[in-house]
Image 1 (cartoon, rainbow, N blue to C red):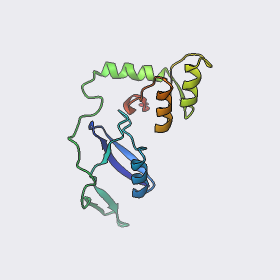
Image 2: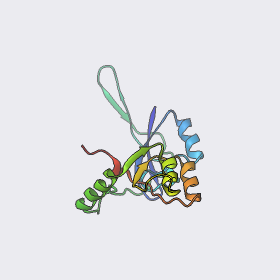
Image 3: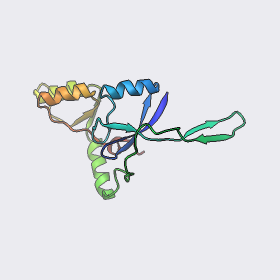
Image 4: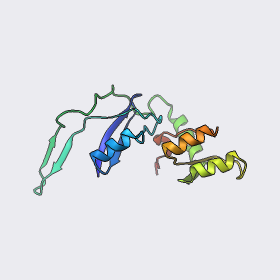
Length: 152
């Protein structure tokens, strides 16, 4: 497993976990690596330090030989500039939704076509599933991670 520091063209920074560097490249080329905040598919790897611990407990840190892509200008945390009360209220709203997980595309369709009761839901959808929902005229929006992460 390898963890890459990533950023989108809007400057949102996030981590991506991949089986290998090749797995990242394949997923990136297929448009499957997307910003969790704004859903931007133009994502680049950021330089990161490599840390190794020897058996004797000695740390060694080395920077990568060359960055994979130029780093965008640093941006503050995505909640910066938002009043704490607003962020708390948004998290409260998200917590009041039903998490349907991977069933999101199916459940969104059932609600849209009035086969299930109307209610606020959240979950996951692949980029292909999201495109299909958009083509059907089903409205949804990605939630930024700072609203969905458990703070307890």
